[in-house]
Length: 231
Image 1: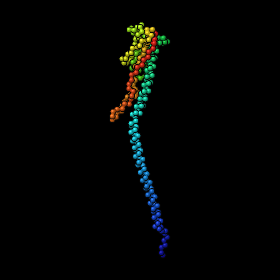
Image 2: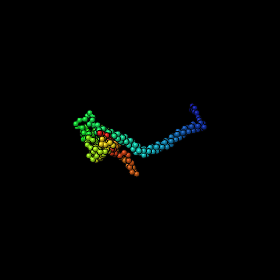
Image 3: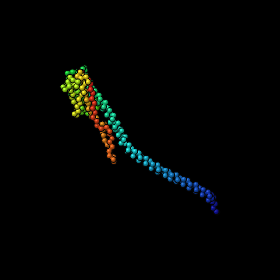
Image 4: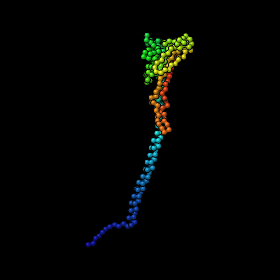
């Protein structure tokens, strides 16, 4: 008995069509993969260049930003200190004039000092500084008051001035001006000198062409004085 086979044969044109379609899809997929690879490389290189540029810009601008920030803090502290330095001699001069007439007057009243005497002008001046400023005990304070006596050189004349007492560190002294209506009135005076040290100390950043100073506010020694008239 002979074999009987049933089969379907494709002509050459149909086989070519199927094979061509398969090859085209493969080629298209390969092209897409290659294009994505080519596009990714330039983007990655651009991102790396941008990061490097940002680091350089940050390194260049950082000293300026630090300078502005640090000196803003130091200038704020400077003005805070200046306000308190203006208040301390004013309080002392008022006490120098009206001290004997206040309700707290007693036998131990000592307008000029020493600084440990709570009834003294110097003590009140140092207390006003101590409440707000560090190292206030090192401040230089001079008290010129009629309670210490009148300078014999110009006593009872138009050049009459009070005697003065100095407290604290330093060697500064100041001569008070005579009152325009001396000898009827005496111009009493309180001087205060304080050394301001910035909160953020001065420091530098070394560079290839030298150093960059990151503080423009050095240590300052400020002098404030207040004069008031007494009879």
